[in-house]
Image 1 (cartoon, helix red, strand yellow):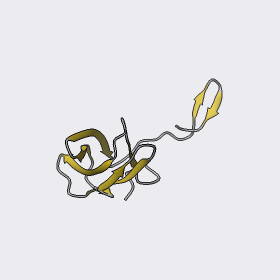
Image 2 (tube, helix red, strand yellow):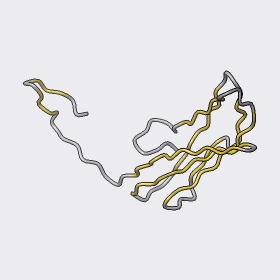
Image 3 (tube, one colour):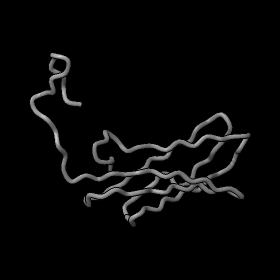
Length: 108
């Protein structure tokens, strides 16, 4: 499921550095805990000159700010990145459009 306010599920990219050529196992931990976080695929082959793409899916109806720690592990090395996911229960907008510099502008 796409993240709230996003047109599609976000993707993660991994690229080889310094001639790295191996499989990487990906895992994700959510804080606070959320059991509905999915990385697909969870195992990617990382090679020089090519990128591997992984889709992140997060589904929650509880309004909260989640910190996802995504870790990639290969034989002998491990790297992590943190991703912030904000689930909102309502939004505020202005209507009619905002008047800027004497001209009507659409809301951002």
